[in-house]
Length: 453
Ligand code: OOG
Ligand code: NI
Image 1: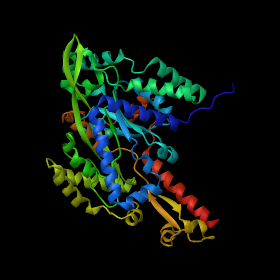
Image 2: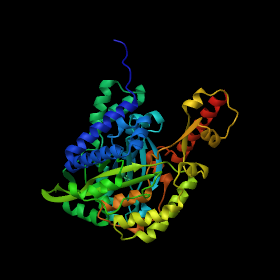
Image 3: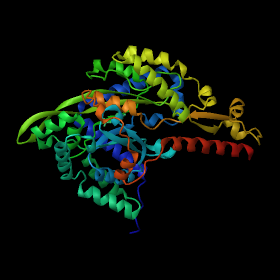
Image 4: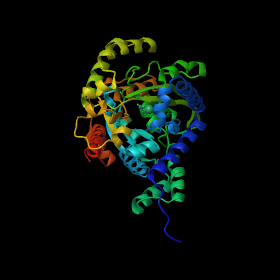
């Protein structure tokens, strides 16, 4: 028999994200309810907004609407993180971005493992926000050492997963049968375990330092703590969550609703209390798992991001303690300073766009004009907003906190350490802004080349 062909990493990621979704729906029934609500609101939005429906259809996004956009996990040691890097590489997911959450009182730093090419993102955009616990930020020596000892004793990967990761690295890919086995072995790492690996006293001591430390340290593996589908109307889903039996976090994170959506808006239903069995046969509960939704807009340039961060900072001084309606009202008011037409976002270089020839552009002869705005005006070129594929540290902190009971520990702040994160990862994290800028400039070059023949 001739040598079997390899399955593409995109296909493995697609199978994995579907298997993960099925597992999480079975584990957390309320997540299934969230998916139904999102689906219903998406349908209604498309019926109401035919321009949106048409745009999604031309951009070939309709068939992918129901696919989860991201999930999140938290790991405890450098070697767990480094092995995850190798595991995600099998699915074409690489670490992009460095997020310091210590600033927001959460003792972790994070990256997102995600596909980076256009075709890979279009095939299945699934990504995993991955946080590494920073034991060095625990003040008590005894507690820190206890946590380190517990973590050193576990292996979050099955022997089968380790073997298939190595096999992928040595062969350069996986066959169809190996890919299926890989998906089911890899899934084990993300499964929920009802049994804690520690006794209740140890759990409580770690929990008292920070809930997140207990969540990472006391279980056999880094259970997936949420999955996140894409909604076309986040305000509506937030509004309807209580009627559907879900308890939404107080406010939607990120920018306000706009004509030209920017970056990322997110909200979640709060984590559920789940019964847990501790060593010594004692019963207790643990709160970790929730469901989230997201709505993405255009990626911002460094200049646009600076403006976003400044306006968000201003709004935070005024929104503390407000309910979502008031919070959104204040945000909308403050964000009137952020241009809200595509032309203005381009002109002021606040956001990234991908340039393409229009039908007329493809049929035109040689054109000498090289000014893209002029070419757009002449109807030869169109500019599409490049979707933001990454995360926002302040929003992420808000998601963490609403699901961790709002603990905040300012003692952790001011501890960004990208070098230490990359040393743990045994690799570099890619810079997200560079990825967007490269995509924009490649599209400019291609368009101009085509027009100048
Ligand atoms: C991750 C929270 C961050 C997001 O969407 O910003 C996140 C976590 O709770 O582990 O998923
Ligand atoms: Ni999330």
